[in-house]
Image 1 (tube, rainbow, N blue to C red):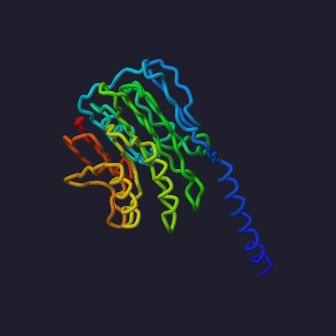
Image 2: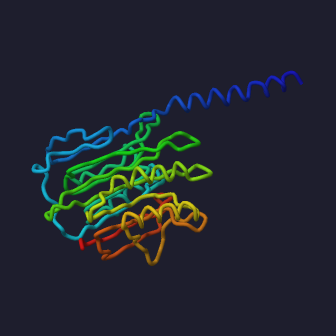
Image 3: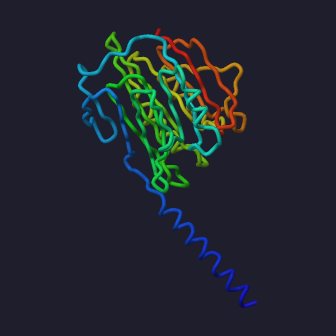
Length: 280
C-alpha cells in the first residue's frame, strides 16, 4: 500500500516536470518575429513596432492584371504528402498565403516571402507565410495570445502600390481558437482591420478565421461589412467545417471574383483555397 501511495505522490510531480520541460522548449515572440526576404533589393525602415516601409519611389508599381491566389492552412507540415501538394498547388499562382506554416515551408519560385511567427518550438518557427511575385511597399506583423494556452495567433499584411495612386492590401490571418467567449477573437480582428485603409484601396483578406460558431461568424461579418469587403463563395465547397461553420475564408474589396475553388486533401487537416481575382 505504501508503495502505491508513493506512486500516486510521484505521478503528479512527474507530470509537472514533464509540463515544465515541454514549456521550456517554447519561445514566444512579443512582438512577433518577422522574416522578410526578396530578390529585389530594397531598404525598409520601421514605421512602428510592427510595420516596415520602403521609399515609395523605389517600389515597382503592381500591374492591374488578374491575380491568382492560394490560401492554405498547412497544419505545420505534419501530414504526409504536403511537400508535393504545396509545389503542385502553388503552380501558376501569383500569391500564396499559408497558415500554421513552419521553417520547412518554402517556395523558391516566388521572388518575395514574408514570414510572421508568434512562437518557436524546439527552434522551429510557426506562424503565417506570404509568398508573392513582386515586392511590397509596406509589410506588417501582428499577434494575439490565445487566452488559455498563451501561444500567439498571428497575421501579416503586405501592401503593393498601384498605378492609380491606390494600393492592394493583402492580409494573411490565423485567428484565436481557444476561448469560451470571443473577447480576444474580437480584439485580434480589431487590430487586423486597423491595417485596412479607409479609402477604396483594393483588399484581399484570407486565411484561417476559426469562425466555428454563430457568435464568432457574426463578429467577423460585422468587421467585414464595416470595411466594405465581400465574402468569396465556393461551389462545390470542400472547405473544412467545424460545428457546421467553415473555418477558412477569402474576403475582397475592389476586386471581382473570376473563379474560386477548394479541394479535399490528405496532406493537411484544412482544404486549400484558390481564387482568381481582377481589379474593378
